Amino acid sequence: MQALRKSNHINREFSDNEIKEIQKFLRHMLVGVKLEQYIKIFNYIDYYSNPIYAYRSFTVKELLSFKRLKQILNEGQFEPVNLFYSVNTYKSYENSSDSNIGQITNILIDIDYKKSYFNKLTKDEFIKMMEYEYFGTIIPCPSAIIYTGNNFHITYKIKYPVNATDKAKALAKRIQKEISNKLSDFNADKSVNLTTSTRFLYTYNSKTMNMVTAKVYEDKLYELRDLQQWMPELPNWYDKWKNQKKKNKGKKKVHNVFNLYNLLQTRLGDLEKIQELRDYSCHGYRELICFLYRNFAIQSLLIGDSPEDAAKQAERMMLEFNSRFKRLLIEKNAESKTRNVERKQYNFKNETIITMLNIKDHEQRELKTIIDDNEYMRRQRAYDEKRKEERKKARRNVKWYLCQGHIKKITKLQEDDFYIE
Image 1 (cartoon, rainbow, N blue to C red):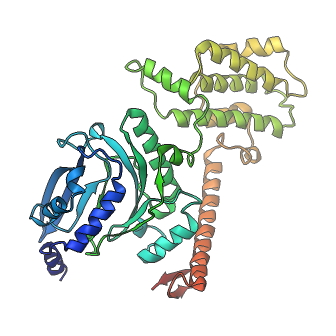
Image 2: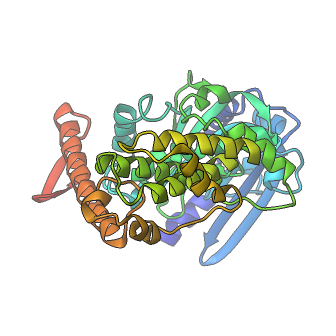
């Protein structure tokens, strides 16, 4: 039966009204794009277990013409099942690589909500929930939300498409990543990819044989800087690090610099917390904790500063840290006993730091990163319990939608579960 349905859909042509609606949607999503650049169209059909693939490139000008669009869609080059087009343009027709992107015109996030806790919501109920709970509050309201026949794509139209320079692509990918992270509850794809595609309206998804539809928010057009305002600010060392990275290109490879910087900063905060927990006494550990503080400080500063500036700043930070003790170390001794970190920095494991400073279990509960496996597992269990509470809250939200009339019907299965009809 599924194969018969698929066969019927494959043999159909788009009506003039459908092509006009597709043309209207493309004009909205491609406004301002250079007409001579290319859109990639991709077709995949699993026809009686015999996969058929088709790839073509067309200029934006061709796709925005009703007559040419009708020829492309109805004259046998493609079938209306699993038919995709690229949301950004390409400089040439040869390939779909990141380096060939011509203009950034859309930022797309793929939401696989059918694999999330909210998988029982219908497409209309899901859209309403996003509009009430997320759009304009947690994430910017998209330019369109596309129902792919099974899940959703949300896309942000760039009002004035920008040339795909390295800087513009990096910013667009950062925006894409940040929005995806905020939609993790709906199993949003966290990969960053500007070569992604979406489906044509009035085509079908072979998984469900449901038709692709879209809801357009016509006034929601964005400049990149508008979307950037929804992003967390970059740390103040970022520009210096970026310039230094360009100078060092080919000499060394830097991995996960944000994670490293955040880890070092968090460890400094933990050392300050230990000092506070021990009532600014730390008897028998003052010299050692000052050494560790200076060691982590200089490592974090070296990410963005020159070695000379980093060394001076780390020394100043350590002396300020020492000054908080009730009985501070003599400044000259504190400086000399910790100076070795200017020559060599040490990457101590958590277990080593815990042993060095004799950090007790009750102290670890107050720290962010200097913890052992037992404390990590305790926090994981607490996190799991919190997630359970969030799920219960989500259930209550769905019931609220029911009371408000946003959901038609809800049938209770168990005390802690439900499904929606």
